[in-house]
Length: 119
Ligand SMILES: [Zn+2]
Figure 1 (cartoon, protein in one colour):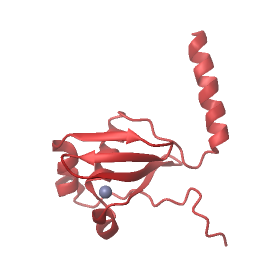
Figure 2 (cartoon, rainbow, N blue to C red):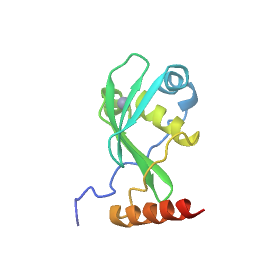
Figure 3 (cartoon, rainbow, N blue to C red):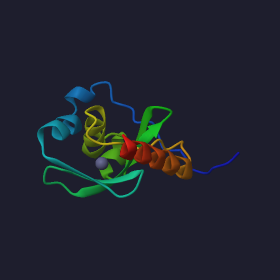
């Protein structure tokens, strides 16, 4: 019924041979730079390549995301997404649950912060 894209980002599907994919190898081997733009968007640079805007988060615990680069457009997989995935599984970044209401999330983070302050 609704065509809204709220929470409608595609699941990040690892290609069958993702471990052998050039994208994954690049993400592993080359220096990556990941900078958050907002709760769902990141600027990602792999090696000496261009910076690309990547949407990355989770939906009910499943990683979802997309990239604006050509590789992603053709393969639904790219070095930038691979870099995000890698950082995510290594717990180097904290990603947002894109299903969560941003206000709720903020309230939750705030409570967490307050609790942290009291500890
Ligand atoms: Zn990309």
